[in-house]
Length: 300
Image (cartoon, rainbow, N blue to C red; front, top):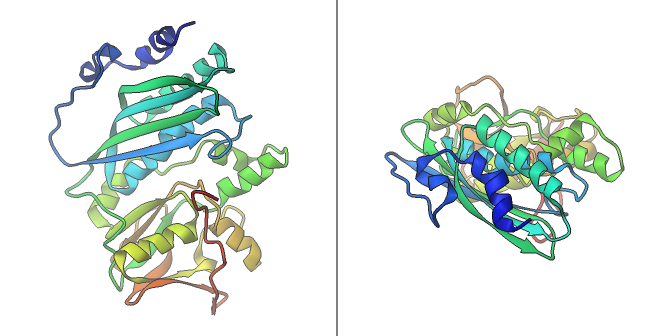
């Protein structure tokens, strides 16, 4: 089947927004009022998902990694554009599975697909989704903005995806494996709370410690994390096991700083902001040195 026929059969039915003219034009034409966040994420087979992962879950993960960025900015998902570099050795059934997952989660998060691109490749499957989100409140929230005296909050649990990836590489299917394949995001409604209360915010994509260090750096503050307070997928009293979960990626939970006293369901206080610079850690009431690897660095 020709590429255009795959688009007409599988992707065009996802598009019902007049702004995209049912993919019959080269560009979507949007009329926008308000403040918007724009984010894009790429997934590459063998790096961001395993070659054997069901493609329905890959399609869902593609949507969620961008949606988590938007929520962290205090934005409600609105529009999406998807680009696919499709391997020549994969067939139509695989393409249908990918689009099934993609379409299901676009609908779940209320995102209108307004365009994109497809190409054939001799390399691995590569996917990109660009997402547009409208500010849920009066403002959007950047990574920078943390202030001395703020507390550090995190949503959900940390380390599930890393444990899931390790299990899958060992040939085991576990509950954590499901979290690696399809990230468990906070409700979209959390964007309202973030917009109203957070001084700085980002999603935990490359590891809790690495993303916390990034927040501290761009905010020009010092950040201390109490590792005993971190809500772990598998709680442990062993520092080595705690650090494994705190340096694993793909959790896509919310990490934010807020003024003292701000509380919300599903958020756990794990640290504090002070004057100075850098990240510091404490465990069992004593300061510990930073591990040599804080998280996943692109190029690892």
